[in-house]
Amino acid sequence: MSAAQRRLGRLAALDAALRGRLVVSVQPVDDGPLDDDATVVRMARAALAGGAAGLRIEGASRLAAVRAAVTVPLIGIVKHDLPASPVRITPRLEDVHALVAAGADLVALDSTERPRPVPLAALLSAVHAAGLPAMADASCAADARAAMALGFEVVGSTLSGYTGGPVPDEPDLHLVRELARAGCRVVAEGRYHRPEQAAAAIAAGAWCVTVGSALTRLEHATGWFAAAVAAAAVPTARTPGFPAPGQTR
Image 1 (tube, rainbow, N blue to C red):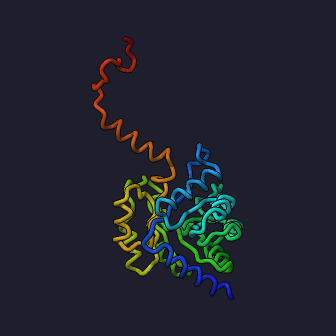
Image 2: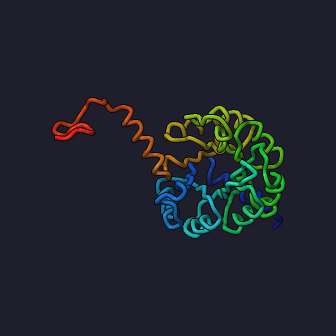
Image 3: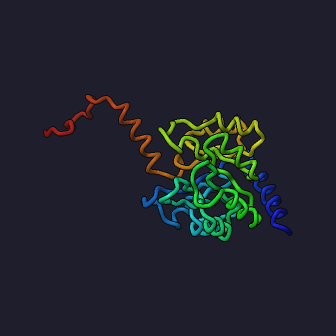
């Protein structure tokens, strides 16, 4: 079977498994208490127990550990902080090769129009040569359309709001809707913090929805609740019998 035939077969399997479903991005906060392979594997299994149909995993060795524990589709990425490029998501050919060897079903690449160490077309060719489909992590409709013209099978709203300026609070449903109308397989991703937002993405035409921080970055989710509670607290309200901060009995 040729690489092209394997790619089309894998894409058909992804369509059957992920269309209209939830993908969970299991990427703990870097260097946090949950940032180890064994914990990521347990979080991945917990996400599947809750109903996730697929997983997005960062790092080839970590993806291999998850691959050994689950059978669902895995979207693989490798992140780098490069000195000469703002592109972080799977920017190098060796990243593609490592993800393929680790067992990824779909390889995601930053598809933004920014300086990069390897041309996007070369990275895409490496993914396709391995018999896998590729996902373009886009920041805008122009990124996504250019990626589709190159031959990407899937596009994501992953980087919308993350390539400069203040990060918005809400997900980019407008981008999801625009790309879905253009006929793209769209992964709605980025700032989906509540179930109703994920449902709205499917209603807007998303192929599937990826949720990360709200489910697998406990520090972030806890921070949202802590900030909301603190903002709503009445400064003068004190628990009876307890002194105010800075006071003694």
